[in-house]
Image (tube, rainbow, N blue to C red; front, side, top):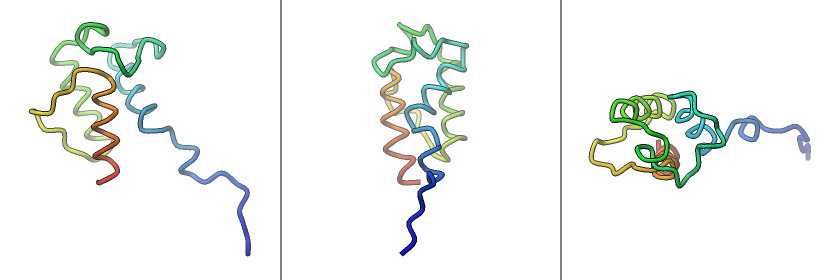
Length: 90
């Protein structure tokens, strides 16, 4: 039986958490070190409603998911959890 010793493409791809962090930090050129799962988008990162909508649209595009308006997304961790739970199902 042949066993490959090369890294599979799944291992070289950034995790969902890393991708979500990158999308959020890119929105306002925030240092990645400031983006933590417990960070509030409004209070800690100073995002307004337009910023949050843009993040949602970017996440929907990147992960081929739909994020309904009524989903409570206040922290970075809320976004990570939602994407992780729904991207796997997509």
